[in-house]
Image (cartoon, rainbow, N blue to C red; front, side):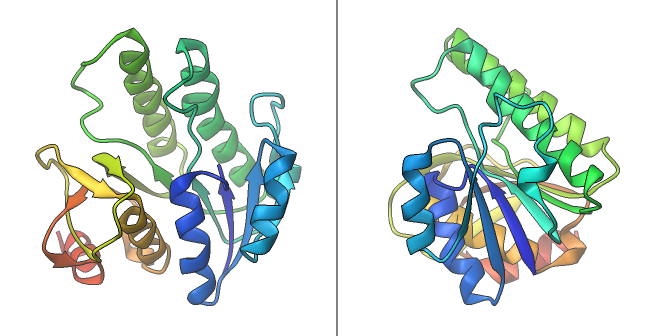
Length: 214
């Protein structure tokens, strides 16, 4: 399977690339910064420089694929404006490109408890932007899966998680988020599902299968 990742130099994405390659998939990575091209090439990823904030139509950069993954984010140091232009508008531009290019599968990295306002103005804007992006994807007609991790850490992945529609807040290593994304992409029956993700005791494959079974 050919997978396009938007936000390909992010911490989750950099874990994801190797996991997808190990499963026999090829990856095209979209990045804003040309300085990141060499890192992607070293990881076996086809790099494409694409500033999602600078273009209304990113379909040419996305190209042909069987699936897309939105793993971009404005980042913790960004202000209110970029929460809209990256976290919401970037996700919507990717779904529009997927539809234009005939790509049905879309996996979104979102966040938990978007309907619970908290934090300062910037973080509350982030929550609203992510919520609007998720809603646009649910209404897009694409075969979507929305993965909503808890607070992200850089601890080594354990391969064990908790997945569900409404979990208590918790933490999750970025590596385990990437492992869940890879498993979701290889599990077509996750299309139409949206679930929270935190550290837990269930092996990832079993957890994903349980979500599908309901």
